[in-house]
Length: 66
Image 1 (cartoon, rainbow, N blue to C red):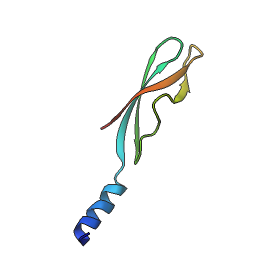
Image 2: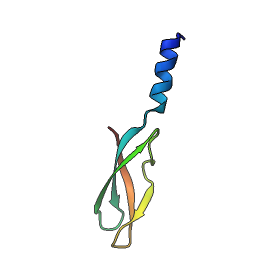
Image 3: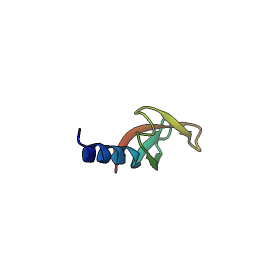
Image 4: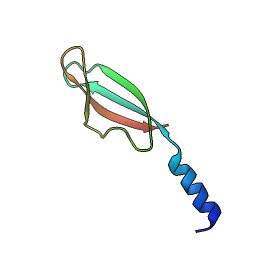
């Protein structure tokens, strides 16, 4: 690997990405959208991430890299 390619690869690794996470309540189907920064996806599909006011849990159904 050339020094330039190595340097670019290292820079890309250090860059944080923006993720849009869409989750729906497992009881009332209310939608919750989060914007999260990180090097890797913040959640996995099916993760229960927060409590809904109705008493259910928001379940991750979509993760988009921006």
